[in-house]
Every structure is written in structure tokens, then in C-alpha cells.
Image (cartoon, rainbow, N blue to C red):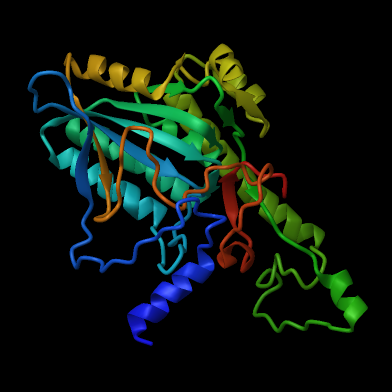
Length: 328
């Protein structure tokens, strides 16, 4: 059996017909140049060179590759910045729509994306419309605060303004099986947050201070992005809870309720153009049949509602997260 035949057989085993109604699959060689490509998904009537770029921000936002089947997967921050760069350098792109479908992610990844959107606006002057799909919570909302206008599908869930630092205490379980841990450290806080022993009161105080600091940063970002809201109003909303689109509109967290098509029309209006082709960016061999197409392997669902297999680095060490989850 040749290598190709073995690969085909392996693909058949892990992609059964039950998961693939057509019973078909394709294995193809990847091109050397994997630079993102533009694809026109909606053509305007007549002729125009103007473009509105729809940029997807999906899944858990982390500063790491999100592993996929037979691949290391995409790096959410890097991939988004790559698409922003293409849109910034293309004079035909007059505005962008950030289609956000994410429960958030790490503090740093969320802030990096926020800063990159601000930099895009400052460098290009092009309008940025944030459009919320299923979920745009916590770090997803944080990023959206850099946009010029926020729209949400009427069935979208948003908010979850806050910070969580999830840790585990395995000491009781270890004692049951007769295992103990003994760390030699250079200072009393060097192993703070260790899952192998209960947390000490002074360690909790240190971590709480860090969480409070990142929380204040989140509130400041919302205040900058939603100038009609006072700080006191934001603090009342920023208790970690999520809101429906209607609630978010009532409280001033978003500007409008609408569809992706509405978001694209808003982007055209802000750019001062009447017609534009709608484009999306993807890796070679990916196919985007229309503006509702999403990249493969995205996991936009909230972690506390669905079974999401988080990467292993989630539990290696304590992490500060702008994310919608019940683990906190």
C-alpha cells in the first residue's frame, strides 16, 4: 500500500459517512505560498472597484496556534492581523466589517486585537464596523470596543465584561491516591497558584489584585469605546453577566441590531460609497461561497454552554482571561 493510499484510508477512518453525508473527502497538496487570498463573495451590480472586507474573528482568542486536524491550526491574533494588513494596504477596500463570533480569550490576545484595530483605523482612516454573530462576549466585546460602530444579530449574546483566573486544587485527590508534591522555590510566591496544594490567603490577595487591575483596564476600554456611557453605568453592567442583543442595545453596549447585510450597508454608508464588492480573506484551498461562510474548525460557542475541547496550555499554568465561562 502506497503512502497516499494509507493517508486516504486513514482519512476514511476518521471521517466516517455518519459525519459526512456525502461520503466524500479530498486530500490535496498544499501550495508553498500560504499568504491569505482575497475572494469576492458578493459582486455589486454594474462595475466598481470599491470593496468592503468582511474579516472573521472566531473561536477562543489565544496567543497560540489552535490545533486542527492534521495541522497546527491558525494563530487567532496573527491570522486576524494578517487580514487587517491586507485590507489596510488595498486602496480598493473602503471599510471593514469585523464579524466576531467568540466567547473571548486571554487578556493579552484580546488586548492585542483591540490595539491592532485601533492602529488600523489610525493608519488608514477606514471605518470599522463590528458585527456580533452567535457570541461576542468578554474578550470578543473588548476587541469590538475599538470599532466605530457595533451591531449585533438579534439572537446574539454579548457582555461578560470581567476577568477570570481559573486554577485547580488537586491536593485532596492526590492524598486519596497517596501522592504528594514538594516544591523547592526561591521565594514564597514562586509556586503561587500551584494545583498541588490549597492556595494561601496572601497568594489569593496577590492574584485578586492582578485580576482587579485587568478588570479596570477592561472598564477603561469600554469607556473609551462607548463614550455615551458613564463609568458608573459601565460598572453596573460589568459584573460578568451576559446580555441579549436587545438588552445590550437598551444599556448602550451596542449601537444597532441588524444582520450581516445591514453591517455591510453601514460600512458603505460610513465610507461614503453606494456600491461595493464584498470580499473575504482565506488561506489557499479554502472556499468561501458567500458572506455567511465561516472558516473550518471555529469554536465560537460559549464554554459554559457547549462541550469545547480546550488546548492543553489552558491547564498548564494560571492564566488571566477575558472569557465567558462558569469555571470562575
